[in-house]
Length: 367
Image 1 (cartoon, rainbow, N blue to C red):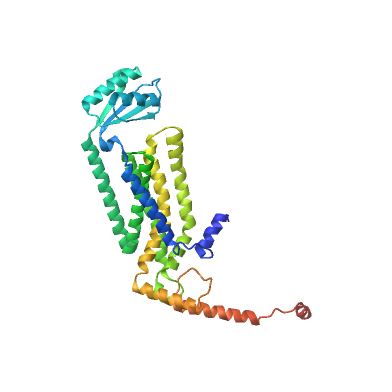
Image 2: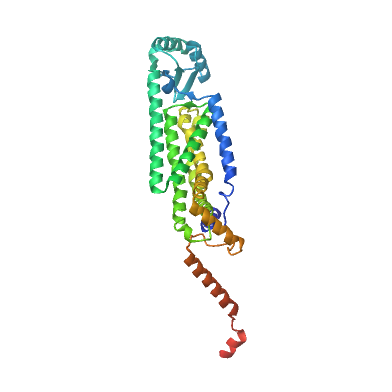
């Protein structure tokens, strides 16, 4: 078995582990700091909205030209008086200029054709009105709201409302970080970005539900035993699925990193940045939130219940008396099972003390 696989098996059995729940205040502080940074970046720098949201014109040059991308950008900004984004699509160019009406677009098209030394018919112009962009933005917000509502309803039915609240906070956490990164980096926000955001929310939710399912299974009849608190079992659930979460996240990030760093950066396919950055940041944030935010929040909410408080009091009292062994089985058992297992262990120890192996001499005489 590989070292990673052996570690995963030991984590699953509870032989080793890290106290994620016990250090939850550290994770909360880190998340709050990152979230504040993202909000400040969003407030100060704002988002670089694409023309699909703010309106403008797109000029597609249907002929290979001698001018470079930077020269074409200078020509476009000089002709329009606005910032321009120039992207390569194969051997052709795609020029985006915001805040242009029909008359201005015709004039810019003519000047671009003159500067690039091509016929005006070789440039296709597409206008996007601001009202259409506003409709797209409203539909994006509506879709996001419906998604969040369905998530809360599903988790409340399949698990419980505390898990639904924790998952919702984790999703908002992932969204805020991803949007804040877009504000810091200055990448253009397009409908592809919205698609990427919805995709990473689904992935983050999947990773969270895996931990929640393990937690739900291990906390059945938890109040019938006095060995583990709810936080103890929550911590075991995280450790038991830790290697699996890391593996799935790394495997998912590798192709997305190829899109972002090779396709968008090295090859210059700028349109890939629209969706790849949101996927890359969102996948990493989703894995973080499912481990360090969602499950610790559930443990905090659950241990506010009177039954969980009473259980914690009994467990701590038992441990204070030295009745709780340092190492124990990871499964949750009721009191009767605990007593049987303890009796069996005691009996085995007594038998082991009294048992004596026959000497070699005795075996030789019997022969």
